[in-house]
Structure formats: C-alpha cells, structure tokens
Image (cartoon, rainbow, N blue to C red; front, side, top):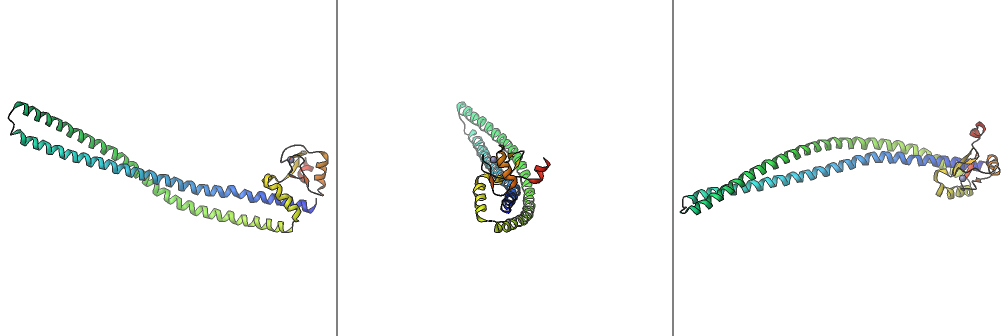
Amino acid sequence: MNRHIKQLIELSKIDKEVDAFDPQIEAVNHRYEATLSKKATLEQSIKELDLECAELQQKKVQNEHYLSELSDKLRENKKKASDIKTEKEMKSLQLEEEIAKEQISFANEEIVRLDKIEQSKQERLNELKNSLEELEQNVATIKQESDVQMAQIDLLRQEVFARKEALVSKMNQKGLSYYQKIRRWAKNSTAVPIHKKACMGCYIVVSDKVYNDAILGEEIVSCPHCGRILYVETSKESAA
Ligand SMILES: [Zn+2]
C-alpha cells in the first residue's frame, strides 16, 4: 500500500480517537452539572417552603389579632349589658355575643389548623435542608473527581493530538485536503474498510475493479456510491 494512503487511513483512525474523547468529557460534565441542577432545585424548594411558612405565620398573627378584637368586643358587651332597658336590646346583645363566640371558636380552630400545616411544612423544610447539606458535600467531592478525570482525559488527548500533529506534518497537502473535504460530511467514516466486498460506509458492494484497486493501494480509491475513501484491511481480508 502506498505511503500516502497508509497515512490517510492512520489519520482517520487518529481522528476517531480524538472524537471518542467528546462523550467522555460530556459524561464528566454531565455528572457535575446534574448535581448542580439538583442543588438549584433543592434551594428553590427551600425558598418556596420558607415563604409558605412565613405566610402561614402571618395568617396566624392575623387570627390572633382578630381573636383579641373579639374578646374586646365581648368585654364591651358585658359593660353594655348593665345599661340595657328593653328585652329587644337584650336579645340583640345576646345575638352579638353568640356570633362573637362562634367567631372566636372559628378563629381558634383556624389557628390550630394553620399550626398543623406549618408544622408539617417545617418538617419537610428540615428534611430538604439536610438533603441540601449532604448534596453540598457531594458537589465538592464530584467537583474534585471531575477535575481529576478531566485532567486524565486531557493528558490522553494531548498524546493523541501530538501523534496527529506529527502525522499531518509528514502528509502531502493534496491528500490531506481531499481527506478533510470528505471528513466534513463523513465524520468518523471518512476512510472505511471494504468488508465482504462492500464499502463499510454505505454498505453497498463495490465492483471488482474498485476492490482490486483498493487492494493494490497505489492511489486513493473512493467508493463510487458514497465517495468515502476505501481501503482493504489485509489481515482481515486474508482471514475471511
Ligand atoms: Zn460507500
């Protein structure tokens, strides 16, 4: 096989290695970002619950205020009772008193009800705050782990880049630009082997002439169907 073709095939393999780092980097980033987003969600829930508890407390204060107004009213009614002259006045005062007492019991019930709700929200709030504390520690650990993983990936990547640079510097410009033109659309299948006489890019069988040209490897052979660069993997083909 011609040296230039060997270089193209080698380059396509190195490019594949370079691209293989992307999902690894993505996975590392994803893990860290997912933890951050979980933390943000938790913080938001805590904020909302805090607000809800504050509203409940305010409602309780309003009810307590209302209660003290009602007891003031009852005290006043008692004073008025001594000045009552007619039965009609007495009945109306009794009615007022009954209503005030009903309202008092209602306000008391309402305070108990609000208390219960607030208590359960407070419990939930404490749970969330504990989870957040735990998660914050996790975030720190995951950040450290991510940094280490990224550094490892970066080292490996630098090694591959160095190999690519060394190879590209030896390659002829014409073959390289031909390769790059195909790579723009074919990505990691720019140079593909022929397997069982079919192009492993488009899986269409190639003619005997194309196949033989690829075995000879004297010049770049392109798939007549898809345009990818074709080569024959000698060890594989002889085994087949
Ligand atoms: Zn093809």
